[in-house]
Image 1: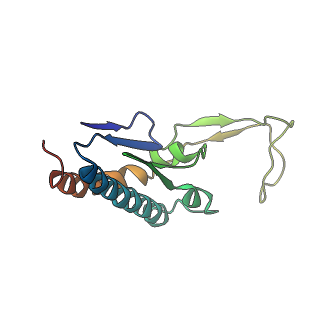
Image 2: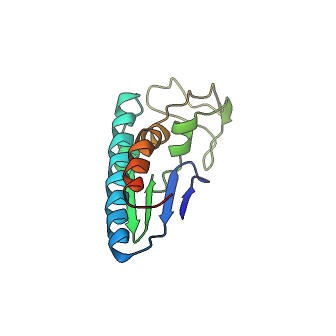
Amino acid sequence: MIKIDSSELNKFSIYLKAKSEEDEKKIQKILKNSAMTIQKDAISNLTKNGSVKTGHLRRGVANFRRGMTATVHTSNIKYAVMVEKGTKAHIIKPKNKKALYWKGASHPVKQVNHPGSKAKPYLMPAFDKEVPYFVEKLKEVVEW
């Protein structure tokens, strides 16, 4: 049985059920290799598409494996999905102060009309690139 959960865009989980202990070890190795490849490619994609300013998101891309489950995620970084999918135009207002100010602004402002941002996918392309290799390796172990 293969179960792929992509319900959350910033995380992919894959669960497999093996027939034997030997198959389970082979699948765990495949999961480990694919998770590490997706992580590496996602980090590379962030750099290539110009999404790196502080490196926080790039450092946050990680993988987690336990048994027959492998997950590649962005460590609860709130803006990760916004980088992946982009944003619509929106208004930014201060939360705790009366005005917004940032380095380079001529004066504090009450709100900013943000034009939105273009999507810069990094995790989905890494996942899509790895899927054919992952499936090919699984075919060697699992009966379809």
